[in-house]
Amino acid sequence: MENKVPEVSVGSCGLTMPVIGMGTASYPPADAETIKSAILEAIKAGYRHFDTAFVYGSEQPLGEAIAEALNIGLIKSRDELFITSKLWCTFAEQDLVIPAVKMSLKNLQLEYLDLYLIHWPLKFSKEVSRLPVPKEEVFLLDFKSVWSAMEECQFLGLTKAIGVSNFSSKSLKEILSFAKIPPAVNQVEMNPLWQQKELNEFCKAKGIHVSAHSPLGSIGAKLGDNRILQCDALKEIAEARGKTTAQISLRWVYEQGASVITKSFNKDRMKSNIEIFEWSLSMEDLEKISCLPQLKASSLSLIIELSKELEAEL
Image: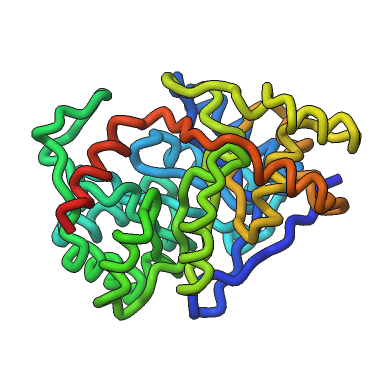
């Protein structure tokens, strides 16, 4: 039996988005058949929001999974799904944005996206195939021209909504100063050990929905860790409530008003991660979590540092 996931309104066009999405990024990269099988299991479990990106290499297997789900009757229409993809930094130029979204649509075998995000507030001078990215090949995004091209994607019906990912308040202010269509979503790392309180409040005030990637930290990432699942305070709350530590973290993110992009290709964890809606955290639980020491754990720390340095030039 599939679980019903609540939805949240994003943007000003009446679009609604399931508050839990399945992420499709993995390190080391999973093979296409593994990704496809996991997505089909996720649809069976009740997931309807799928998060991909050009750089993940998961657009094609996601597209194949959608086609198969339609073929075998798991879903009746593509419209039942919410699909997010992202503009990679090598295509972050005004004249490359529309070709990039069309390439993603071709990979996905879709006519439109529900949400298209600028992946980072950065531009790479040429295709970067490895980390760390050479510093001399990273530049601050030309926000105005690239956002104008993103708006054109929405005007053309290539995506229903547009937004950003890994953007600070400062970068968002820059876009809001000239945007005809404000960003509907800002997808950022957010979890009990990196709570993003100020950014979350800023986004709420501006009508930008926050979507949390890495809600369980960067487990499995090259430079990630499992600090959240090993956090004593979260484990104590989980044990007292008969929940998993992962469920406590996901529920905390949801109670901050954010949606969640969670990633597991394990069938049982997939089901467990979606079972966070029939209960809530107590005030005491929330107080404990608010006092946790904060440390960002993204596996892309070099990109983040470069982003901060370049952003200082705004």
